[in-house]
Length: 380
Image (tube, rainbow, N blue to C red; front, side, top):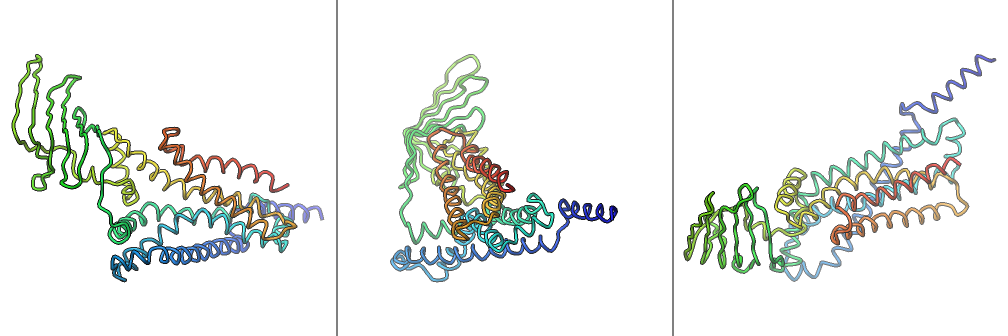
């Protein structure tokens, strides 16, 4: 009798801590993933219907071809929507089917059989890993090229406005020791006003070229400076002056630098995005904050799947008197507050209050603390 009792205790302990997938694990994983995917597909269909009703007048007015509407716009719009609502539906999915398990007393039966609450979380976290990998793959590799075609379509058939560069008094470091200043840029003739180019070596000014204006030369891939004036200095400080009506110069400043919009970062794969960040950091370009926000968002959004899953299981595993509706209401409120907080925290970057990485990760940090608290309270 004593040996049989020890064997039962050992079996129960193994059942409690073993990470080998069991029938129960596969049951939870299938429930999680299937509910998650169906929920995403439903919300994609709803968003597309509302988007069509909003933009149908623009499609008709600008005579957008049906083929481009379907394949250039909406086919590339779907990955964007999937990733945007992924955190929301991870949380709602967990709340929904875990509440059903709790309402049917299945959670109580699982815990009574010797499975610990920590062990119960394993299939949930495996499913969260699937959602996180899906979101990461979409954000890193699928959405950037899709966004390129989607934004091109929007510019052509929806917005349709000519681009105006609103930046003035632009200071860039093109390379170590080479600095450029432009007072303003005109998109009408691709020209800049009050162009200045300085070269500095060993903390010494080597040359300084100023021009009343400079026009982009498509053939040379450089700038044609008008009414230029160049001062050059040798190592002894002797000055040489050169001036003229016109001079071509090729520098690491192209027309794309002036036509680059804020949302261009959404179209760049991660390798190109990192290259843009390095270039903008070297130049001291204030637009780098948009690239940094985009980079950290692509990582922080998938990571949120684990935090929201832990919070969802901890909140909905207890059988409540109000039933399924109370848990779903709590889940929707918390998930929407999370998404709202993510958008709101990015405003702190633009005001200079927080660095981009902290602003993007702040919602995850705060909700991770909340998730840890409700997790500790859940077994009680």
